[in-house]
Length: 186
Ligand SMILES: [Zn+2]
Image 1: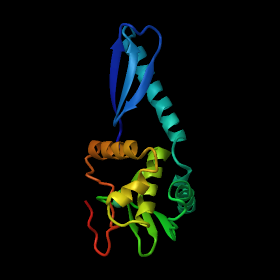
Image 2: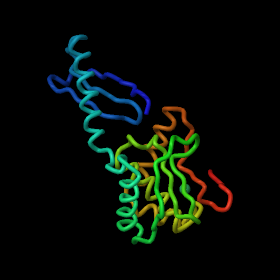
Image 3: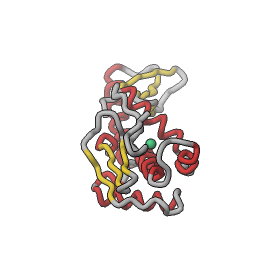
């Protein structure tokens, strides 16, 4: 993921507290109005590293290996898809040009772009549920989304992925070649 943009906002109402949050691809740091430039610099660096640490903690254990990834898929299938999606293989693959992930329903295999290794766990989970749902329903019709939306953070995760794709000008859509026989990615 690209280096974040940082926006510093100073507030007169704010006396002591410094805080920071992520707004899409940007990080907003809130500072008291009367802070010196030197203090500002120190605090911004400090808040960025704190935020990064907390985001790192929220990454998925599935990032570690293909085994961890398939394990996560089985958990998600059990939890959201009544255990009906049973992938035979799930792998991390080098970044794909236009896709976050893809699946081949006839082989029950799923490939996930390494670009997703550092996203929060709940975003990766959405991608996995999406691909797993293709093992049940090819294409992106209403039946497909009925399964996917059982995962409660679906809309938020779609927004997150659009945000990082736009920010990095990657033009990546979560789409895949699930519509057999030939890919019909949107
Ligand atoms: Zn899809």
